[in-house]
Image (tube, rainbow, N blue to C red; front, side, top):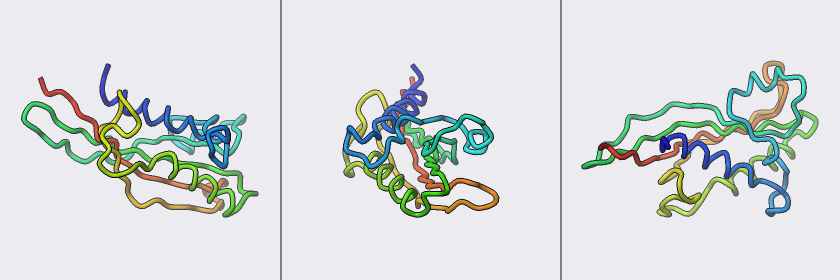
Length: 150
């Protein structure tokens, strides 16, 4: 199987563990999607809170002797109903951080198959407004994935 697809699947599987039964604050793991938030907001039967994983900027691959590391850029976007305000955003943010962040230097932080390493860019929170009617938490990350160069 394509190691890039395995890294994406590992991310989706990891996000699906965000449930109160696993010690999290929300049940957002029941509503994990891949795609753009705008398309989900237009859907009629969407329940909140939800997570969607969107493509993001991918840096150039790093070449090794035989293998290379490709870094998949992804944005993990959590969306909350606007009635929840900052409390709802903070619950989502806390759950996403607890789920995604692992100690430095642990190879394959979410198990195999999956990314070799995960790094993060600066997260952001946005309250609902006229452009996006749901509050959102955005966590940009990169899934560093080893690809055999043979």
